[in-house]
Length: 143
Image (tube, rainbow, N blue to C red; front, side):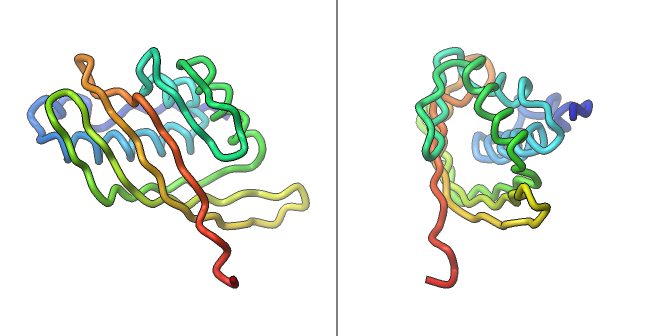
């Protein structure tokens, strides 16, 4: 399911501080995923960017990232939400630390929530692009 989406912050980003830009881009990434625009989410990665998803080989480059994101979407991952907790930057590099939640639609139709944390490394190549993205699930609450 592919739904048109264009970032709302596109014109104002050059005038925003780095933390605000990264926070806005994180929301654009989640929206792109949630609307089935996996190619658009993958274009947020640098050409040599890497997505390191749990229980997957590293996806190097935009096409590989797009395939992994599509795999997640087609396997029932919906309603991704991200919350940027911290942004640190120096020059053309930035690190984003955050929390995420996502719902996983099981084959039997039940919904399973997942929560976790993530780290992204961004590099400014004209625009801010993801150089590395890695996340992990929190343990189940009933442990």
